[in-house]
Image 1 (cartoon, rainbow, N blue to C red):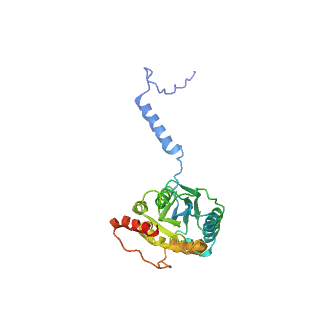
Image 2 (tube, one colour; image 1 turned 120 degrees about the vertical axis):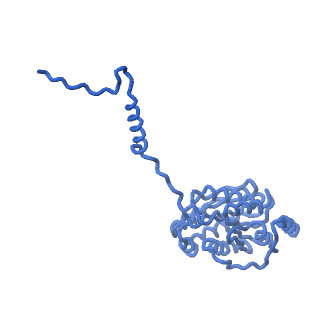
Image 3 (cartoon, rainbow, N blue to C red; image 1 turned 90 degrees about the vertical axis):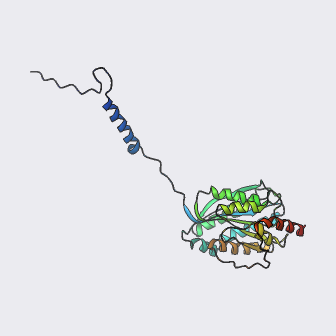
Length: 278
């Protein structure tokens, strides 16, 4: 007697349509495949550092080639200095993100050395080498401290790092003469939780540190330090970097204190300052 194998169950009803149950099974299988069978792209968290720091360096018309070289050498030497590396690695996260910006006029700013992560002496030396090799890219022009603050704020916003402290380290040898008043850019940066520290080079404007105090620096622990001229720059920038990285009290008390002014009087102070040096 010939045995016949039972016919395999067909997903089709007798009228040729697919039953509702098979639709449900198919949908479930697709969902399972999507959720578990297809690998998801990994989500990379932004690295966290103690400090994200922008070195915003004046390359306006008042800075000649020799002075530019002295600035560049001073910054490079500072990041080869053991005291700076020790300050970086003494933080709770033992890491700092840093970049280098050149600036002059209101629309003349450029990031020259991209974001570097410094965690030890080798990575600090690598950043120092990048600084030492950096050419003067931004054309010398007017002096826009407000433009420098705004450009530095944008770099911090898109750094790719989460930072416990965000700092703009701005150095220059003159007061603002291009773009809007720096107090407005400063106040906007402070509102974003950014600290602005200054290094005023007094060669051309002997009261520039007073101007920086009233118009440029601000935020938690913000301070200004001075260099008498560009020959004094390397020593001044070393002390400044150690202070802002380690969040130390001021090692260089000011020789003159700016008058304490309320917010509405700051524009008047700026005007009086400019009249005094004109």
